[in-house]
Image (cartoon, rainbow, N blue to C red; front, side, top):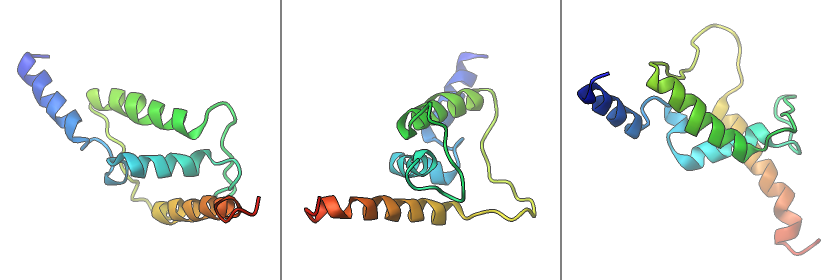
Length: 111
């Protein structure tokens, strides 16, 4: 790869455009990976593995795996097929609400 090509690639990586819009913001990433890694609030009968927590999953996936794939020309994108799927934003919001509800007794001093 020429230095100019490498510069163009780096500019592309710096924009985060290789990530879906829902994953370009750090806080959105955090909410997604908390929903994936939350063993206390099951999401659509999905039970995450115990070997990694949400933070490790976020760092590995965003900072390593997807970045590595992007420098090799791959991008994560939503599939447009006709198979029924859950809505990602609804899943994340539902998990966020459940986590906040679980904290309510602590916040209200009832623990």
